[in-house]
Length: 361
Image (cartoon, rainbow, N blue to C red; front, side, top):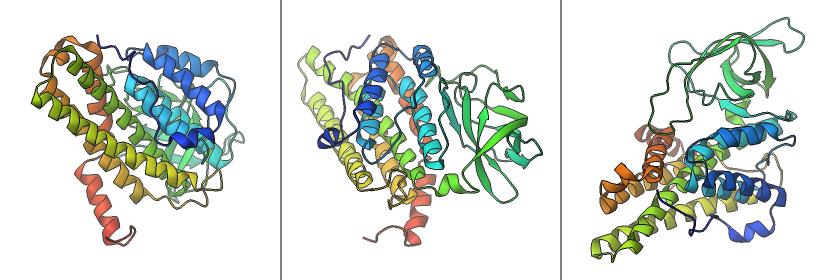
């Protein structure tokens, strides 16, 4: 089993920002990091910890962005399962804050915005005075749906897409209990959910979820986690060079991996610096678009794929067959970065370039 005890525990994209940032956010992330170091891909203790909390999780803001993104990367370097479980919980806190909604204590949150091709989830207005809306239909890719207490769910209305908060323990919510066969993120089952007249509270206006300033930032936060997963694999690669005298190829692979991580850290540091320029906590004055997020996500995903390949070439089959921690990191990251849609996301980026929505070179 690979040990990262001697490795740096914290990744920071902007070290000077930590002196200005919210100490509560730093402490919250530090507690999650401690859990990640011994989790071994099991989110059970994390989920219990989050459900026990009576206070609101740290909310992404200009003063907390480095702590949260760096913290998520640091957690991911130890355990991508823990990072994958906590990211939507924090995303939900940010979404609710931006929409002006209060946080429910002792809750563990999910965010479900994926679309199914043929039968999208529908939201209908009803006479129920408590919520005014109900959800009907399937929703795919609902991670930990049997564990979350509440979720922010996107659905279609007559006017467009809208997001709602739903009590996932409600009798009108049916989670797919089929076995989750994935080797990557094996303990983050992400099957479908069937909603049948499930009461739902609106969060934001129609089309607000995709148009809000924080949407692109959530996408970059996920990229920070991918980056952290690549750092975890790099640490295994680095440790291998200390176990025996590295030859020139081993040094070349180590150097190339370091170069890629340096580039990724610089990209994310630049993103942190841009977000810190915002003067409003809801980012209403921030010009940080989805095309910008696509650039960042594509670059980080490519770096992660290369780090996975380098580690395979440098370390051979051994760690992939006998080192459970390393094997889990590689499998988890390989699945996680598929949230980037490869050439399809590049095609979307190309469309934005063609339409002049990014500065021209």
